[in-house]
Image (tube, rainbow, N blue to C red; front, side, top):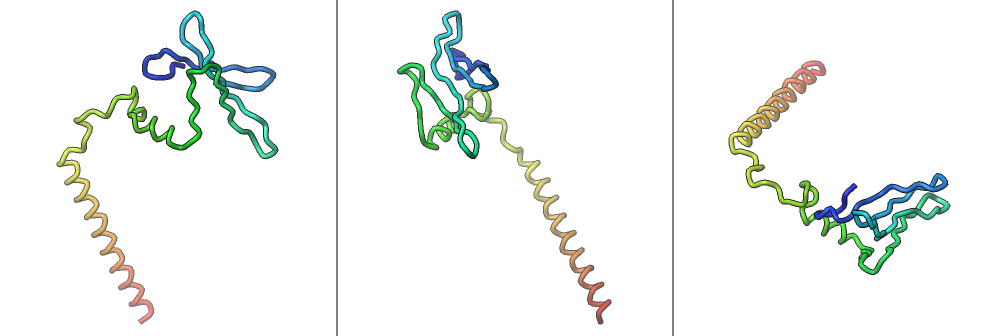
Amino acid sequence: MDIGRSGRLEAVALTAAGDHAVLVREAGADGRGRALLTTDKLPDGERLVVMPLDDEVEVRVDGDALAIWLGSGSITGGGSPAPADSRVPPWASIIGGALLLLVVAFAVIGSAVAFAWILELFA
């Protein structure tokens, strides 16, 4: 699986004696290892361990790393921002608003009828 925008890195699944890991390496013939993701066993589960294999690997230990990655547009696919024409057209908003008002009106009318029946039963 390719990692990053340039496709220069790839992730490779590794298995040894029933234990699984992910090796991040350079794509191509040399395949220089960059980082290894594995786990440590704990009494109540497992802990993720990231082992940098060279000096060019940056390890971030805070929640900002995920926010930075998501904020860069990775969630839209390909790291590019959403297209400008992906906004909801005005006619769709009007139809949606009208349907919402219709549902609220039916709820109010249904509640009034139900309470009228209940008051007739106990009156």
